[in-house]
Length: 430
Length: 209
Image (cartoon, rainbow over all chains, first blue to last red; front, side):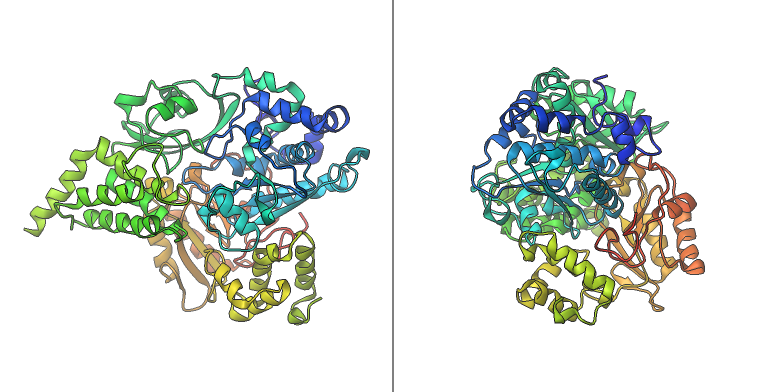
């Protein structure tokens, strides 16, 4: 029973898992009734703390601890982060599209616990269908009395607004998201102050990922301790992984953490395409340093084990590459993404990501120069001194250091391939 | 309603009011209002930006600073069909560059351009969250997953021949798509008639799901 928390409804009822009727028929909104009628706000926060759930947006910060930082000033806000844009990630899209009421119920419970009277769902602009589904679910919830004034006859009232983004990866960073929601450019803010103290309209604000909030109804129905009991100690609960790239069975998989990468890639993902070999994979979205088969196949899929091996589980996006992949071209594609999405505030990121893109492009174009590898690493060192992971930063947010990951990955694991491309181009130039 | 948008359609004036009513501070309405203004003016034109500025009481320059930050606010005319080809890492690994090449050739518009007849605008875009169904393309932001180069050719020909007023993600997926990121569930009749996100208070179609 505990093996599926988030996706059981969409698996068992594919034709109508998104409707309020099916949601209620399968136990939906019972957690809300329990929370509002039987529990105090403090008790709910206590359960979420006890669940040990770590945020599912990428940073992995414990949700209950984050809630504990919320300043007492009024009004305060809950903002659900559905700006999912990390290349390789498509899990929130499925939750928004296929089980939006689970998210809405989580929002109402969380808002009650946090003393919030107006919550927002920020959905990336490229997700019109998921946004329509959430909008519809919210309208259904209003009609059913789960939203609006005096919910379930209590004194608790809540409004929820869906906000559509404009096509900017950086708005997934929580302070950039808040600026965007205020009708401004999506540029990250300097922290502190953290959003829990000064967030939306400079009021105390909690920003949580779609998947995180969608777990709340289960936690209320089954207790925080039951959630904490699932999986390894510091990677509690189930988690959505998005598998893509050269893999036989791409898709989202809700799994209990702790299995090996071998199990995830071969047993769950079906392995790489027939007749091909695994070359490398990205364990947690385009920002994460890459893993390689002879080092990491037996590493457990947990937040801490991946971190100990110099990368991160991030958003749960696993991008698999087989031996046909030109790793320099793949790195260029990822660096190009970060160069395009840099907001431009911090010089090391704005200038550095563009330089990295240009140097990789000329290597790919057969115009590589002998000093290019040193140049790449020098630029990386200016963005993220020491080339460590987690990265040291010269920038307000981690976008710049994310562009360093593909470079350090290819120089660490595929240096001969990179060098060969440069030598070849020198021969060609004569 | 504000006189600045008295020339908007009744429906879009009502949308604008609903949007303004849904935020505690009206500046938050800038992005959704820009989408609606883009419906009125075909794109986020200078007039569109001035009107949004008047609605939320900030300067037009402040609105322009927002418009220029986000890729989905278009600052020049967009064709009837905006074809966005994802070329980020997962789609790249599955042949997105060939899909882009086919789309550019079939439409006669390269990245950032609009075809001479005004029918197609083409762009390559960063990750659109369809990595499990790579390569992915969106038409007016309505998604098609598992689109091979050959199917991309057919998609453009179909748009050219049938010129649908509303593009439906489910219909296009059925006709031209392949591998999907996940089970999409039941077919919907919502869709977009203009290259702006179409849902709820924002768009021209699909408001009454």
